[in-house]
Image (cartoon, rainbow, N blue to C red):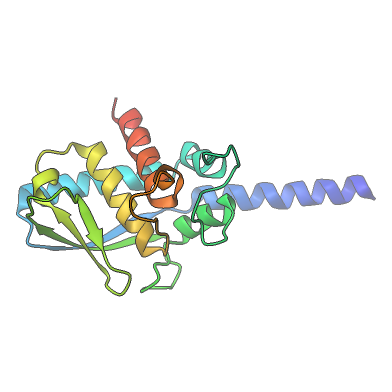
Length: 187
């Protein structure tokens, strides 16, 4: 009986993974103050993010992410496990658009500042502001890093300012991993 139960459970788990692998992930973007050239650069980065999120390598990266204490967990993770964070990414249910739709919904505004901020957002706004000072020079992988970082804020993940823990938070940790995986894909 135990063997039958284990076999049934394994089959159900396999079907869930197989079904999840066949579902797609998308991006849906509103562009503000972009010219066509800059819009095309951002769309290329978003297309790469979608391809990475759909990959088994990304799944494994999120599920196996270790923090600076060697624990398989993100810092400042809102109490979520790596598995739950991965599912939240796949669901694409932003805090201000909470319906799971497997879509990275973004409202991006192009602006210029001489300051060192690459991009920013606010919890009470669907918008993300990206600094042309950086984006005009960035390649696809660098843009994907920042966009994914900002989008994880839209999912509700944050980070303390100016702490040593930043690289192990969801926005910084997965932003860096996204850039790495996009670079690998584009070789």
